[in-house]
Amino acid sequence: MLAATDRAQAAIADALELGGAAPAVLVHLAAYPGESVEALHKVLGISQPGTVQVVQRLVDRGLLERRPGRDRRTHALHLTTAGHAALGEVLERRAQVLEALLAPLSAAERKQLTPLLEKVVSGLADDRPQGLTVCRLCDRDACCREPGCPLGHTTVR
Image (cartoon, rainbow, N blue to C red; front, side, top):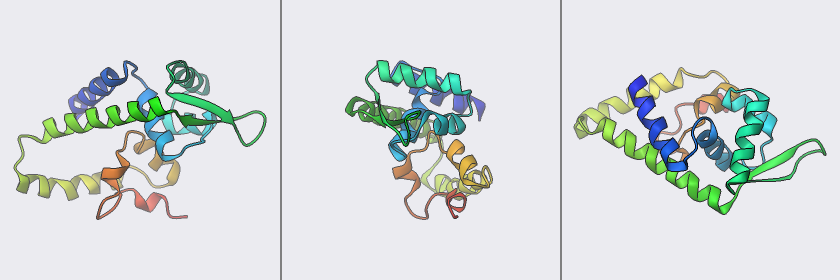
């Protein structure tokens, strides 16, 4: 599984020409526009100064913009048009890597594997903060098809 993660990260970093947490920032802000750096740093699991640096790199590249936040101390972060395009590329590269990884499996084997992987994923988080961290590179369009997100139980309040 580590090799699969390495392949996905390399393909995604290549798509953006930015590695690390940058792709996860795009994915998260597409689902939750207007989040603050503080909220992002909790999702990413990196330091607050590290999050500020990632956000600044994305702003400098024209992929994010800062807007006024809830108060004078915070900014609401939003994807730009270029940021949405970069997000599309990130998700496409992720899908290509997953398709290549699953290529050796027949359709029947994939059908068997899917519920098993969903069960594994469902055990990765018990609450919303953990769920957001697990889903930081999630393709929400794919994930939210029937039968639904395997981490749906983390969003129940």
